[in-house]
Image (cartoon, rainbow, N blue to C red; front, side):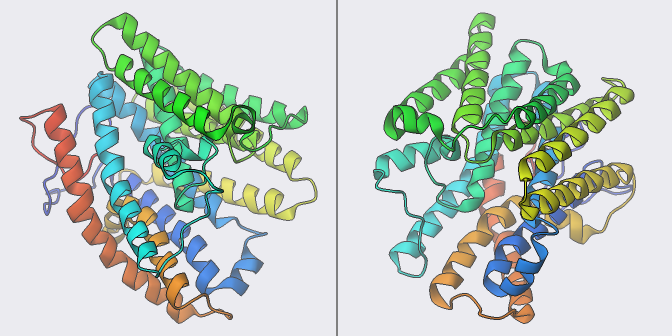
Length: 418
């Protein structure tokens, strides 16, 4: 996650001696985004009336995930460029994402078997099919409903990793500003031209099982080849993975095509900002890219929304506030920020994945409230955060350690690797 030059790594339980952390503002942003996403989902259970009033004006879900996507775009490609090795990049990503993901899935399945939580209906799909789709983390793009609703964003994260590696292997990773503009313009053009793709269109054409089998094999080959020592194999693997991501996003997504393109435009915009901030690109290019991406995203949402105020107003307000939040964080990057926010950001991945499991248990036992109950909403947060501290310490941190040992056996272990 850290941007070059390399920053001093922190061991668990230690803190910088002086000055604000170079990464503190990113942690603060993730902390804010995590809280908003949790509110978005918990409000279904505890504040349904208030939620119905708020959503048409401010789509809290889209706000949270857009902040997360901007942060991912800022830090993930930088980690690949800093290491300069696709193999170590994939090891870092897999051990960053999968351990907690696996633990949360096991917890949810256990709660389901105990009869205290329900899981989604997979429409008659076999257990093997659903399992393989989820292991790739591309399930949302493979015509398979996510076991947890929040996992849909991880499908876009994984696709972004594939695209980042593709650009890196063909040496186009420095063109992040141009890539973000291109994607944003394509989003606007698709709306203006009335271009729509049915949800999971490719699945309907070839079938769920064949698509999952083909995509999982292609993904394994792509990652393996891109991590190889041969330059030709690396380029082949990188391009193969990039093509897979583009095909799935364009032809088999569950969100509208324009929004998928905007998501990736936002992520590459984050990369462009990072490059400009570190002197690897002109700041005017980053600012110009931001203007185009914001204009195209807002125009796309407005044009697509038609008579649906939820889409047009709620989405646009959420998107603009997410961009402004990221910009505010960037301006405050040299200031010391509240440890509560930075600490929350450090456990934000746990907060993001654990909270829907707790909500599923609450819905399956106590049930949803008929009227707004602010006390129970606050109590949910009070219960959630200590649990996330535990999952972070005993699941995330060990996973990061294992990944670091595979990448650099002699390196000190940090409690964070984003």
